[in-house]
Image (tube, rainbow, N blue to C red; front, side, top):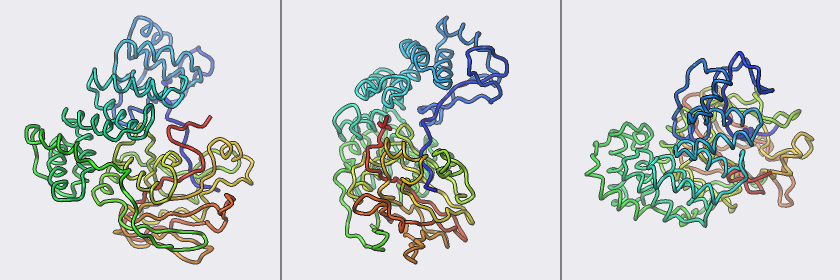
Length: 446
């Protein structure tokens, strides 16, 4: 059984007990409203715990109620009616609401309910940022610019959007900009000022990244620092890996030291903590993710809309070390192992001998490498074991391990079987961004 893979994109809808139309309406589920940008920002749009009947919602939407139009768009996406979902999201977005326009851009980027159009998605996000000042639009547009989605990659333009958001006192942008500063005295000074301001705004991940209690800063104290930080933010494309160790020849395991700075590691763990959910594996009978006793840890998956420029910089480093293109990485996932939690011996390649996996391999490609970044090391036990090689590796915080899942001919290497042993004391955190032989970014497969 292979490792867990990302589920289909978060979908949204509403449910109620009594409804006669349309066909396929789910009657017994509780209210569920989760869409990409809500997950990115943590925002939950207010809705009643007992939503009105569908007919009433349609009536409100037809009268121009933007909230009702958005909810209808999510509902029709849920029941598999993309044209209706598009119609109502267009109505809400064309009314000028930033919320709906960002969602429409995300759907266009992913080819969900709309024809895939990254250029239009980026243009809409940048227009929302310029006209409404919505923080989500700034950070999402910055990430698309850095990733080369919708326009040629431009780190300068990505940082421009992040700098504007930071100047508007947006705590996530202040934190990201701080963490992208060079590791020198001036970079540390600028980072301290920006993190101090983000912490004063109550941003928990900034406090975690700082690793202490910074002096609170006012907008006036940070104004010049924000501009300087934007000018000095390091482009992750300029990073190159240092010397590495071949830990094991079969399966091939390479180790790179000090890939992830301490502040980045603390920041990522803080972002992941509220998003953790039980990990899954691939069901050989259906090809779909499922819970299994062989895997007992938790994880948080950071799809593009959940991500930011710090994740982007770290995955760029993984790509540089692995020698693989960034766009072939799956969405990063942060794995947490509490004492006693484990992942029993397994393969990360998609087994071509399992019929249920054939379509996935054809569309999404084979997993060829598994990069693991060790986010902490203050635990005992919890090594990454390689049973066929008779060895195990317990990384130092910041280390990057790269396991090759296939042989040079592209066929699965069954000696790549590995396991996440349970920690005895303390909690183990790692980040994985498994690499395939086909592009994965924005899920561009059919």
